[in-house]
Length: 159
Image (cartoon, rainbow, N blue to C red):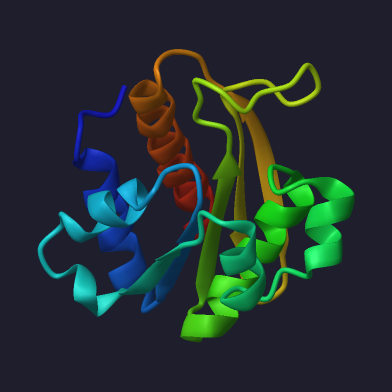
């Protein structure tokens, strides 16, 4: 298991060594991913910025996720996570875009989309992919698990 803080340091070293830049679009994590990335001294060499697009309107206006796609798939979906990753990548002209959307709870879940459901997407020049996660615990625990999962996806994305 990776110790707290080690993952973002490794990510930073890899991004810097490969001369890659990163931007993040967060919903349910509320900025926690950007917080962890910027806890690394020198992160400005590779981290261009982030957007906390909590409201659907922000996903649409800032990140370019079409409102009809949110209506069709739901804000918490693989489709929207991918569009968030692609949108933030475009917005910041980054090599890599990371998009995260989910339900942190304690309310908001349904039988089809339970509390703790989180999608994490990574967008690069030739590829965008997402993973589905289901976490449990308090709102804070779901957010913490989301940030950790997002950093692990980012590691895969830059490897």
